[in-house]
Image 1 (cartoon, rainbow, N blue to C red):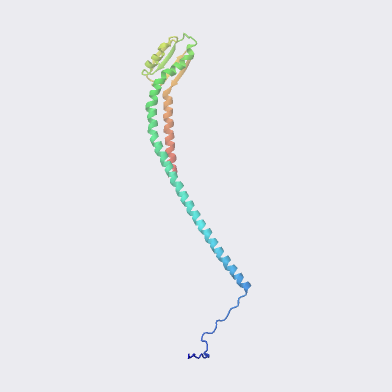
Image 2: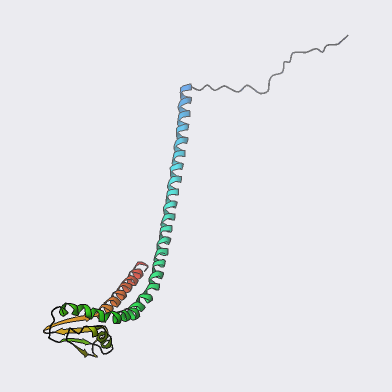
Length: 202
């Protein structure tokens, strides 16, 4: 035979009173919820704009820095190229052009005298040149027997200068002047370029 336990009703008072229930108006709750959402959305949007502006400032600063570095690199490279070219151009003007002028001077004299050969003139044509240049001119003009030429050395002339005197006219060939003008133009260009670079970089 099984014995069953007896269950007695408890008359003890519950020590924790039930929490009071708060009733919220659904409309007011919805307004509060929307206001909180709006506030959070605005704060997030402001943060995003601030972050974007900060990033833009950073990118602009980096771009300006890169452009400045690129500018310096370009100017440095340009200066190096010009620095290497200057002595080369000076040498060309000082050495190559005078040599070329000496080689072409006689031919230029021939070109100036060719129109006169058609006139079969009997008036002598004076070819006045530096003593160092005169033999080369005489050699080139040796076959031009149809022209009555008189060769006159003139030490005061440069080796690239020749005067052709015919009747009352005078023709001047001045390769020395041309070479000097080229040299001056090169010096002026490089001097102006150096002044610009010094002004640009303080």
